[in-house]
Amino acid sequence: MDIKKDEVCIFIPTLNEAPTIGELVNSFKEMGYTHIFVMDGKSTDKTVKIAEESGAIVKIQTGKGKGRAIIEAIDFIQQPYILMLDGDGTYLPEDSEKMLYPLFNGFDHVIGNRLDTFEPGALSNLNHFGNQVINYLFKVAHGEYLHDILSGYRAFTLDSVKRMSLKENGFEIETEISVETIRNQQKVSVVEIQYKPRPGTQTKLHPVRDGAKIISAVWRLARVSNPIFYFGVIGLFVSLIGLIAGIYVAVEWFAGTTHTELALLTVLLIIMGFQIFMFGVIADMLVSFNRELRREIQRLRPPNPPVK
Image (cartoon, rainbow, N blue to C red; front, top):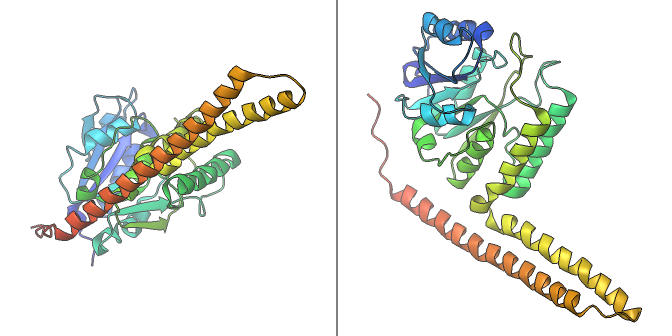
């Protein structure tokens, strides 16, 4: 199916992107896209003025952070297909059709994979390594390998994103979108895209601080999508503490010293760890039942009417 550009909203969250936003908006307009929407995070430079003069519709977000910009933007977008990218000039409009093509052929969500095709200087060795680690942690925690879960170049149907329950306000939003995509059993396509060095603005991502927040989000969000992993990790940790304490009690007992209170604590920790793990097993069964129910509801759901 051909891409119908009048059914696509180009969505660009911005914060102080004056050096790049004008050229970005103009590039999309020259390619024939008529719906360009900018959600600005209270920029202190001329981002808003430049975007408006270039022909974009601009709204100012009420909250703070990229995640809040995305959450608030969903209420304003009316087109059935959304192409989202950062306004810093690192993603190319030339990749737009490659990103949108899967949507017009039945996919719900498209992720632009930067990690195999980025230009020299676009990602530091630390950032590239951190992205790879987070992707594999995501696979362990959520059962799917999506190649580049932190990519800011994404395409999705309006229907699919409205079925997501998004709450993260910061850079963890890409992780949450990926989790929701899997939880809702959406059809995902991953395509390789170009990724350029930032041409005129400073990055707002702190590799260590924000990396730690993202890793925390990967594990925390598994509570809903993969509870056996989430509670299993907690249960294993508690049981491991009990096991270490038990080894100490045993060694001391053979040496002639008895630690009755510590021995009781050891037993309690091991039992508690096992109970937490079993809670995860029960929760996983409930999640599986819920997914099966969602699948059946989706199967019985009438198809969407054609867009006029």
